[in-house]
Image (cartoon, rainbow, N blue to C red; front, side, top):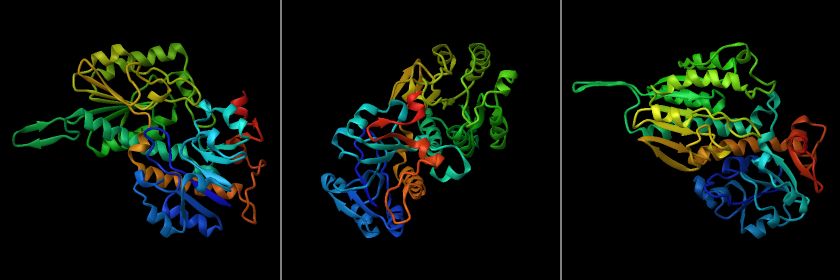
Length: 369
């Protein structure tokens, strides 16, 4: 197949869908790879590095002409793509413009819809990117905090360790916990999923939650958190409110696919925090876990800094791109025939789960529900 990688055009997007390392491996599998000139510069991958790996460097128009598959980080402008183009990327499926894609008969596959099964672990882009986002959330929080994270005992006195509270212990939350612990903070965490308690404890953090019967059944078969009842949320909010007032840094990570982010930190809670404290809202792109957060801004609320980052993986473009490119590399064999041509095997549960549009129609059950 002829694979093409274009320069991302979404605002603040610094990642790229291929690296020189994955280009070599793709070519080794018999594919040809064309990279738009400058596509990897913001991630630290030069045109010369791609060329040395065996890729062809062309302008956007020349690169996409005659291509079989477009590998992308974000969904490009459908109107500017060739009729019938196949696009694989993180396409934000619940906000996906199916009409625009179907108007050009695009075949689109969303990496976010990779099933959470063992066979697909190496293709799980959500996990690879969330892992880095969780790490970066704590780094951003520590920078905004303006004080030391670990305890320091000096001749001039003792510096107390920072108290970090992570709300949501999925992939991003667990990495945030681990990072805060490595930096020397005293870490607590909460989650509605019972399995998270043991995971949080294994990282050396203390678990905070209302552990009633609803809590014990608060996880889907796919490993996601369920939407909790209003009664449970009220009880959890009371517990959390008292805890947040004592924290220096709060990182919120709670997201439910296709839904608005649940409010975890209210305006009243923010106002109980000490001046100089920080809230990092990782769910701001879906409305935010804190109603005071704004996309890609740091809001000062009585001395408390509320930071909303919509694309934390883009703050680590080299590593994020490297992991994402490997996710794509792992997925491509599922849609490649024995003679190296594009073959969407709709009998494969992974492929079926990821296809959004095909032949001018929206075919994904999750979008048609």
